[in-house]
Length: 234
Length: 77
Image (tube, rainbow over all chains, first blue to last red; front, top):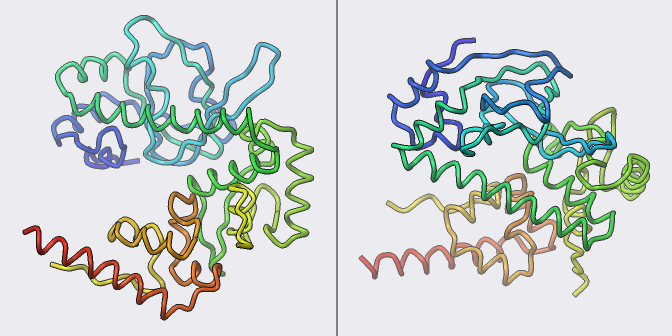
């Protein structure tokens, strides 16, 4: 795969970078390609590299001591992940595992290198802060949903969040997205059984059409009504 | 230079991004479009269909909101 330094400007953290800085980053990067189901890094590994997904799709997940897994987020092309090591001063480990959802390639850059660049380039710190505050806001919303909302509403919100991240319009003009029910269960803090039961009910109501590892939103507004508890009878 | 105004096929995301003043129109018609995860996927036509809004009236109100904001920008120059 041939990468050009300006390709890196598609990464939100590098959107304001100079061409020279992008060349510097690309020259220090190592391209790693892995197959579906393989891992870029594991939770607890030393966070020596940060990654930029160049092609494919990956997920970040965290495991509890008892072995239960939670999906934190899906990583799409040109998103940065595993950058904790570039920010923290002391030796740090990855808080999550990164697994490829399909054949994927990512550019690995030494955390310490970005850390050094940040000392003299305020734009890097600002743009990284933008990324981090976005994550924090998302996590706060998810925490609030877990603590206060009914499961059907949580599933609807997770589905909409996934749609915003990776939905595509198909030839019929319907929004389609690929994910597993297990992913949706982990994102919504519920069980596979509950997700399956809820999706079947929504299918019966004509809100979605489900297939193997994919969902078509036949009535997207219906899902919004559930997620936001909209009362439009006014 | 003024942008070409939004059409029925323009997405909600584009409309709100390019003409922020139209937010008031989305609110006046009691839609839930502002801040919606699906703003990128829905066109103004989709919104009109969903909320049973007359497309002509919908686009006229959009046009008025945009014109008002253009006038405001010109008067500030």
